[in-house]
Image (cartoon, rainbow, N blue to C red; front, side, top):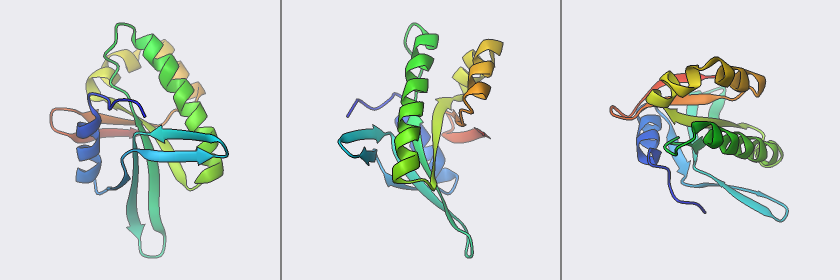
Length: 138
């Protein structure tokens, strides 16, 4: 397992404030001989007759010198985790969690918006200071 991202606890607390129950920290994705670890697994009841929503969350701080390189790595992780998750827990949706600051800056660039749209990359945008979710982007 890798080290926790700098914003891990803030994202976790924001999900809890939003009504999610953290069910795994980290969330294990195991398929045949491959074992991967997304940062969080969470569930939220939606209605008595509809059961619950389930998500897995990969958290990225984007603090390194090149945010584009970090996006390359995050996108690769997202695709890999998503492929295995579709086979092992198809009811669980995978999200990439990022800070509001990174979303307002780097993710507003037209080229980055294209990547997010082309790859249908679902995002959870978190205000790190208040530990609240600013947006769910599907």
